[in-house]
Length: 618
Image (cartoon, rainbow, N blue to C red; front, side, top):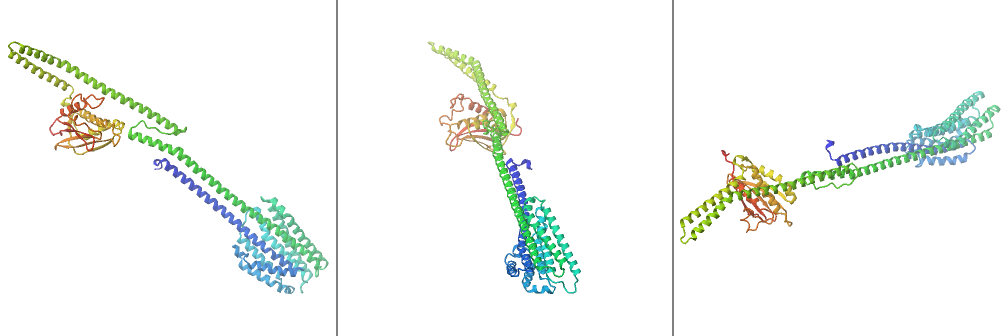
């Protein structure tokens, strides 16, 4: 099925399939990149949201120190941030419930600080809710699902290590900011310190290891440059704070030097939040860089696909122009040659490719065929002319040879009759006898002419039975070149069911061919109307058939219409005047009739009537 389609249809299908594959590929590329971009953007939203929660730790840890007034002001600001449009729900995070819990804890914080002396710890309550909110934001924003080494360890530090680190510092500060509870021994107080110290040391070591792991990513150098100093400074400050706590524990476990510890605690928390800021900023930079890279690759992929599609369309256009169009042109010429047999047609294509070579070969073949056809026509014309000349020569020689004696006898008897009549006494008997001999010689000459005519006629035994419509179609095929040469339009009206005839097929074929060619030549000078030749057949006289050949030429002069069937009479400059005479002779030898009438509105109609074949004839 595909093989039978036209070349242009095949090309259209192939281009359509290719464009469809490009569209599917582009859709897959865009979808994949969009998913990655949305993933990274959501991570960035989560990171920025967590950055907005970082002041919670600064405010709460300041509340534990000597900066209460400032802390109260920043607490109000933080509450406004959490209750404003920048809250998690506004950026697509399901954090509303945890935000409300954190806001409530922050609002209650100034009122409950006094209760911490009674064993309650409002700071740890706020930090626990803030940490829960950070974990929820990290989960909802896909930060915890990030598989990229460049950002995985940084987000772990931001969402897990640093909040726990600061919370642990707050616990240790709370442990030493109150006097030893009643009923608790110094040794128990020391053990609790050692437990908290171990947890904090572990957090510091894990954070340092995670940072080293982050250095192994593609952005390791920039990560190291942006975060290493701040994070290691924070680790050193926290360890210095632990050392101060140990020293205070050794000097006076029940009442360490609170001023020195507050200052050391402030340094540790401020350096930790500074490290948080540095790591957070680098994480945001990497996420933005990733988004920009994904967008650039998306644009590049779409652009490359577009260029490929444009090149494909260009190739399709060039293929259509330089392959399909020449092939169509070649096919059109070949079809026209097959239908019209006009070997003068040529393929107008001068390309140097394979199609151009085929076109050149095809044109050369047409030139050879045209030259061969012209030679055949010239040979046929010359053969026909030679045959006519030979026939006329034979007829002339026969007439001259056979009629010479009767004519000589006529002359002799005429002279004798004149002499007999010239006597003083005319001898009428002798003159009468001479005139009788003249009559006999005239009949003899007529018989000689009849015998010569019989020489050029077919014998009745060679006649066959056939349908004149089939014969007419054969003749039209023979006359096709002549009709085309004279630019004649042919119209046939061959009635089915006409009687068959018994005749010499070749002779009757020559009659119709002569009439058709005469009709075509008669329209050679017509330029103001269509050159129409109509050939029809019909029933004639109940059991006969008539064939009519009608042209749209200038017609025959009425004064010549009774002479055109006479031998050697012609209206053509190159005519011999024998064609119609022979045609009439052949038709009449078959018992038929040939006559001519003017056509309406112009032209001439020749009618050939033949008797129908009767059962029992032949």
